[in-house]
Image 1 (spheres, rainbow, N blue to C red):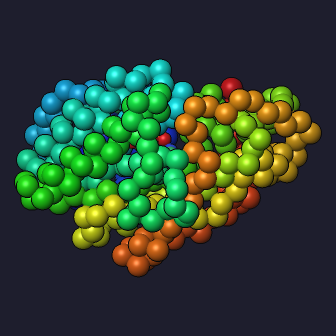
Image 2 (tube, protein in one colour):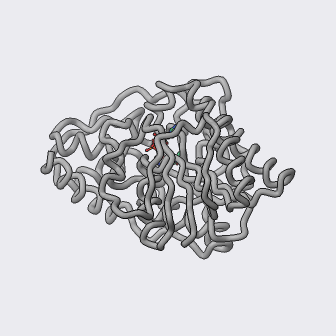
Length: 312
Ligand code: NAD
């Protein structure tokens, strides 16, 4: 039975990854300090193959048993969280990534880092291929997240080149699905919550900025395919279908059959104007591409959100 360590395993993506690995007969050790994650995300998991350890990645990791693969996802991810936890975000991207890479080196395990499309900043190239170096404001409020991830990528490549660690880098684009916190500030859970509460949907700016949204099960399949590959250079994992924020709000209204109005609010500082992954490498290197359209994904999310709200 192979063993996987999932850092940030009690978070949105991490908990789906734990489910996916357990279904494939992995033993899973989930390390999380519950800063932005929750035990609720993993409470459905039963059986001896799963262990949760409340651990802050900033502290050294001690694990007795062999480990085959380390998925390093621990980090605040939503702007609300990293703006609230700026130093912590930098620390988990630096010390936390050192510790996770140190574990992979010690155990001779494959290592995957969950990086982000935010390494491209406010891009001047569209869509964004992995070869684009980005346009990040290092001293703006979002710099704590973007630069932590850029540093974590540099660190990962240094451990690979100098220490021979078998690493890979997933550049994840906006992903959505069940278990996102309704108040985490990201567009889809916010719109769905507002529509279900019969409140106006708040769109930033004039809503012409674009994003590309990947359904969580597609994303997790991509992360796993990358971890199982021999690739070391960054690979974009995301859905290349691109929508304006206004189109997204309209899609949420359609799917939720809501009559809420759309209102406009000031654009946050350094908010990227365009975002679309070029997934040519993911297709070539991993044979991966997403299969769930935005409308389909929103319907899946909406049916779960309705059930969750009904059970409260
Ligand atoms: P999330 O906030 O739901 O999950 C992050 C998890 O990391 C939480 O459970 C949190 O408690 C844990 N964590 C944070 N600091 C920690 C620390 N010091 N020690 C231990 N655990 C810690 O976020 P998510 O959306 O699931 O994102 C997971 C990863 O994927 C992050 O690294 C994020 O940067 C990356 N990512 C996500 C998206 C997305 O759209 N969801 C997009 C790009 C990149």
